[in-house]
Image 1 (cartoon, rainbow, N blue to C red):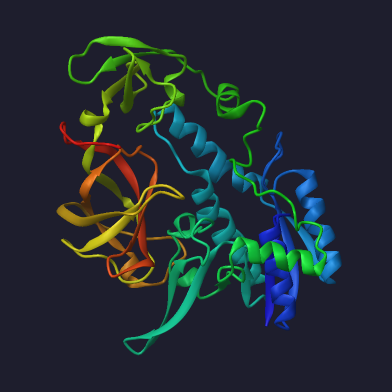
Image 2 (cartoon, one colour):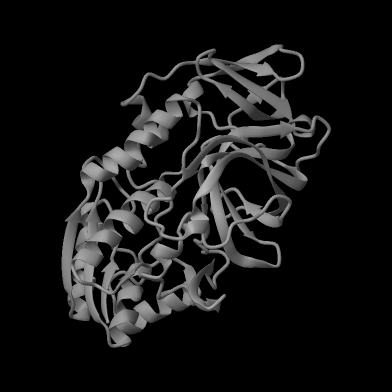
Length: 387
């Protein structure tokens, strides 16, 4: 089998390539050139490209660099900036997976005659036979602390049948041990933690400040309307944020970010809790069969967040046109544009609009069901309790 391995220059993708070679596949490594600006982390720096090339040499496989910088700017960086300008909080890693790695790169792998695309993600794909058809499940990685199924939760059947995650069944300790055994130069390389195009020195504020005008804003009590303080840039505040929200000496959560009005509304832990969020129906995708009205599930709202038990509710149809998930040929992935609410069993911290909510099966918390993008920060309980 011919396998194209996306090699970021990190230890996970290095070992993924090594495992594909050990399995007897015809392997070629590919590193993506995504960002032309300053970068000090995650597959965009010169050092990362060099590490990937050196590992490919150690493994005796060909290595190429694919330039997707224009696509990355249009589909990831541009929307990232635009969403912050609206007071929303996007997840650029998920959008990179959606538009770049598992769309454009996957399509290029297909055109070049590769049977599979392999990456170093800590997740698992399992082939199953269901209703007389071969289907593919997306499952959590074996290492709970490194699981990346959340950032892959928008994948569908058309992608999963063509991708492999060779390290998904391993713990991170095992991955590093394998890299040391093989003498790979990335064996002790630290994991990338930040958004690859945001330089550590300037940070998110510096990056966005070069691309849009940042505005100071007032902090307002959500109950009384009383002005409690100010923030330097309303565009940098995230719904659900507590750090940096200093208001009247009490612990407060941001519960609404209004960029045009230059206002951040805050509430105490008792008043900030939400019992549901609304999703944008146009951004909902399903790995396979969709959830139905009233179904139970677990919702995860960040990469390493604790799953919350919930039910899903589809309300009145707002648009009868079908929503097509790009690249997925499964009919179940075409969802009518109905209002979709996720109701939590226990109070949750308010969820930032723009963030991805991933569903996991109620009967199997390792099985990814689908994903959606939060449209509204959620209905506040007023007397909930956040801890």
